[in-house]
Length: 291
Image (cartoon, rainbow, N blue to C red):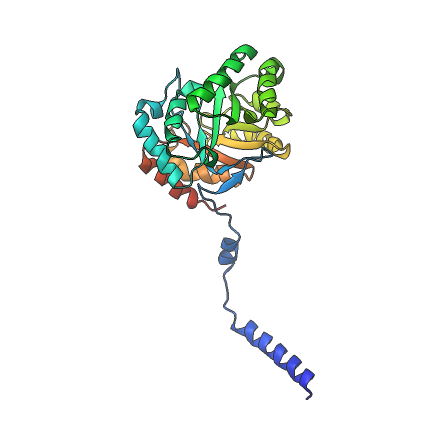
């Protein structure tokens, strides 16, 4: 046997021996290797905005109405402790709104957190262009920032909102061009508003209510998910809220997280916390998701 034949023989023999020696893996193990895993501090790109933030956003609007929420009711120092705790664990996405009265809390947190390390989202209920200009300047002062990463029209509930809100959208669009606002979008509270957002070219991000049980949603999950999937195909970043169904799904958080993250079109999700323990528990639960 010449040298070349000997090498070929040894190569074939070793390959065969390796095949015989390979352990047998059950089908379930092979499937497990293809499971998708998630982390609250995964860095995700939000649609076509170019913004990169953590998968989990720190919400501040639990029972948020009339300029206050459960987060602000606990006092600035207590809520800032939760914000800083989250940042130390890689939560770099902050969700606020005028309606929640939480701007001042995030301003205080920015004394301890570098501005460029976080993505700040806020919302306005203003439907008048003049008031929106005032809101934008006031929000920047209340937050203590030069620019706002994401600015949303809050609680759109009509299918014709792109026509009705055009003067307000023009204000935000002009400031988006100036980089005072980095991205624009809407939070929706009716499926007709979601449908309009999915197709509207001005909209960069859609904040939508989503959970497995349809609790506090715009419509049943099988009605909402196709609309959000269309928005995602059209380049919109999809951000989910009401994962815990306004507290009604506290004992079904695992099912809700699995449902939301299994959709494949959700970039980020926002949840409000009232203690560092709640936040840590959610981080663990997100890490346990397998889809």
